[in-house]
Image (cartoon, rainbow, N blue to C red):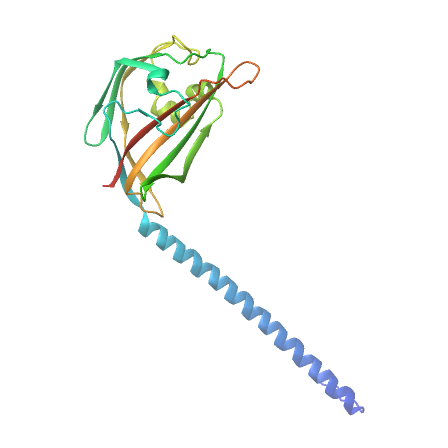
Length: 226
């Protein structure tokens, strides 16, 4: 219903005000529609890109002894300071690593010490080893070894058949025969190239004081697409 006013100036102002509100509402609706559409397009694009770049890879270690010392950390001990593996066998096949036997801990720490482990995947690029975003930190190795929900337990410590409280000098870790699969899936990036898995171990006493005899181990190898 339109009500005519005798005052012409008021009538013009009222009509103009009505038109302005109408245009603003339509513009907001248009903006919201475009934002929603852009979000859906972005999700579809990212999903398609991610699916297209997923691939299966395999890590092939260099050495039949598996572990080597860290040349860039001479102040830290190496594999021979950590464990005697003379009664432990490591066999490589095309797609798995077969392990069996007993390891004797040589590292001069107590089973009551808290051990931290910092592990990082480094890539060899342009003549040097460079850090990558692939890393993991364990704040208490003993707890992680006994945590049935942990990856460490699933891959390693569930296969230890001897009784042990934690690692410490003189502790024997007897293993049943088991295998580690070197295959993995990576999404969003190409992993092919030369890599090293580097792990640094530190021990802390009952008073949470850092012990000076840290350990550094690395597993160099190549990652190929399978």
